[in-house]
Length: 278
Ligand SMILES: Nc1ncnc2c1ncn2[C@@H]1O[C@H](COP(=O)(O)OP(=O)(O)OP(=O)(O)O)[C@@H](O)[C@H]1O
Image (cartoon, rainbow, N blue to C red):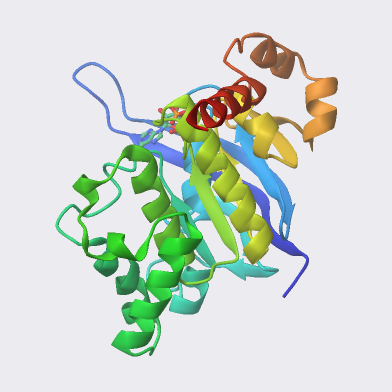
């Protein structure tokens, strides 16, 4: 195990766009040489406007898509993402949580199956052991054993995202790539999921790459913040430094254009709710 859970060196990604009726085929360079490193147990937030390349980078880090050039290193080892080269052991180390908890869970599978399937496919644990691990994980993400035999449609958005997080954690990964994991949720539910992610990070020593366009969320969850603009990194510093004194003109514009509720507001609402319930 290395101290650097994730590193990228000069990652680029081109998309080939076929020509339309009048246009010629062209190549879009979505990532223009991304260098980053994330220490074990830390959270790197990636921010930037729509289309700057956040999701493209997230999918490369999660080994879902290959880069056009450059190197991805997981736990210090360079990864070859071409078909068939990712071993189950490597696949296990990086898991992804998506924005939409409604679309990312198979509606035909019970929660128990959703959680035990990765264990059955990737480990040689018995059915009973898989079931016990899934039950434990349900409790760790704030659900209960009674949820094991229910279907995803029987849950709220926040609960579904808890199931998606449980599925991501069941194989004991090193790194979670979270692509806008709370942006489809109500503000108070967002705060609950962010608190859960923070608790799980402490408990399991997880490393997070957290993609978000919401700076109040980033301020709450991140250790470091990387700002992207048209496929390039324009600023990458500690959260406190970047929020106190953004250096790049694009970062300044981005931060100035964010009148969203702060996490302090979310927290205050949660506290008020809890008080009201007493
Ligand atoms: N499959 C694709 N084919 C062609 N171009 C693509 C494809 N996927 C992404 N792109 C382009 O690559 C660039 C980066 O897109 P990407 O989705 O990574 O950005 P993003 O920052 O995640 O945006 P959003 O916040 O809207 O998801 C954009 O110009 C986008 O149009």
